[in-house]
Image 1 (spheres, rainbow, N blue to C red):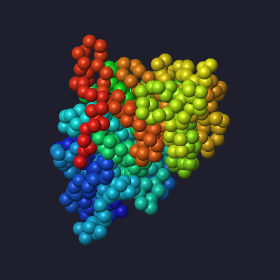
Image 2: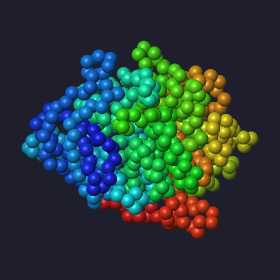
Image 3: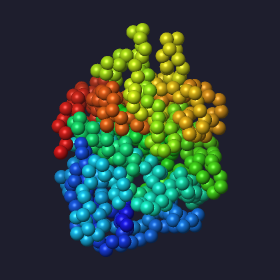
Image 4: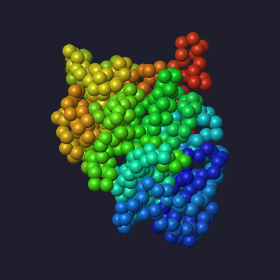
Length: 510
């Protein structure tokens, strides 16, 4: 048995990565791989002495449960990251046993990204922006919220959703459900959303740097060297500092592409030296379920929420979208997005039609599970021509243009069907004031913000399941990876202008 976690999920090339590891083997080593066009083996550590340490017990006293709120305090081991390692997301594969036993464990390949006895971390360049002007934000807070701290054959059932721990707060501590980021749990979401998309990015020649949610939370200057920020997959938990940084980035002419959904649904508060966070959610508190009001929900007005709707930033909200629960990622509709405004640059080269020629509008991603497993939408109404237009009544910016739409019709409030947003939305908004629909769109607020409106966009694109989705992604990256210079700036912005297609035509990283 072996498991572990990094002390911090990002490290600068040339600096020390600290891994905390528990094992019942007398020794172990770590194999490092980089996610790229394929999973690339980078190095193997020296042998470390093994030590077994038990997880902190859950306050519910149930045998086998581990506390999601307490740091595990596993023994630390250091490894200096070589300066020449390129930016990227890396796997640390923990291999237990002596040399003979270790040699019998094959190197990981693209089929072995998901699993236990491994964790991921990010390597950042010594000079941010020197490698690429696209910054890929890995949704690490959301990963921790769902991390059950399981291991092979061990179901510890401890996260925000299963056996959460409530902290009443006080003495400067926020009130809410608490979660430590110093817990093991293996790799799951990274393999599903990120790995195929990262492989596609590198196959396509895009030069990308990476960060975590914590990096964005802590550093007010993090986005300065970058023209385009990417949010990918499932990006549910955001701090106020994260939102402030991204809002300022866009207002300053920077761009964002949300290839994600359920984005910025809950607010989090960092605690314990930024190794844990708290969120007042609707998850269980003792026998109370749902726990309401859940005051860290972004969109409701105080005192029932934060009062800062996420769609003021993204253009869309989970409360106007839906989800497909059940066995994750679920069996979902494959109709795709009905295309609108096919003459928009986002659709250039796709050949898709919007019905303005008198025919039926095409569907983007038809035949794939593009919609879901969670999706976001904007409040909208149809005009006289049958075109869906955002009403702005929910906080969506006036400039938001709906480019693709998938109606969640009929609205089904059963938790076991594609349904209207989060299950507690009907309680908070008992009257449906707009049709609910997964929504792809774009708006400007200084810079440009594109939103795919669905968690599984990066999977469909990364696996190249639909040529239209791939082409739209290329169009967005090529256009938005160049910050538009402010008027009168002489054509330079964000530290240096360059051709729109520069990132796509650069050679793939090896």
